[in-house]
Length: 297
Image (cartoon, rainbow, N blue to C red):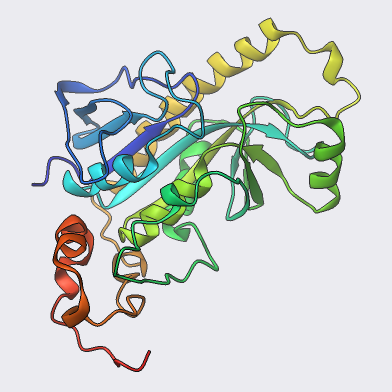
């Protein structure tokens, strides 16, 4: 089934895309349970797009509770081969000001309770994807260009540190992350990036800076009202950026390596794949069932 080729995952505050037309709500069942919510399938800039609110409508899931595997597998079942992910983040560096956008090209994992939600594999089938460069450069290029078209300040590159949450950092933690050279901090996108790579879907993050993390001397002067105001402005900016990005991607073929990420990554010979596991992973490994592997691996 190909309902859409482009997927958009919305983070905190980004629960809808008002420019979508011809909208259908689709409940997708996956071998990994239910996604965060129904997928909103609509037309944006002439292209069918699958939109999903990461935390569910009404923000019902904590970062740890988000059903990451079901969300990405659901995108795969819908025919999505590119995912644009929006995520609210805190800034760990002075140069990333509230209302700026960051398009990170690296992640660092500080989660502790998400091992199960970080891979589709296991239970008899082993795969080790290459993850040195965890986002799709081509998608990053499109997001960067779309920020320029929308006249929104954007920073290309940098490291997104993914923390467990749901509590925010202590000052000590925030200062340690800064000393490591981290750029922005969030709670969700690392798992999405890993799963998208395993599913051979291009993935890139648009990080929406809502505030300086608690390291900043002016942090205590920032009110909740100010943060909400920044979040709302960022959401509208993200919607405009996504609109431009979809328009660019509509007629742009994939030329990156994302679509063959599993080609040399599955270590278990197909003859040894447990039937139940192979059936569960059919949408992402089915095309490799006849590949030859060295059984000595």
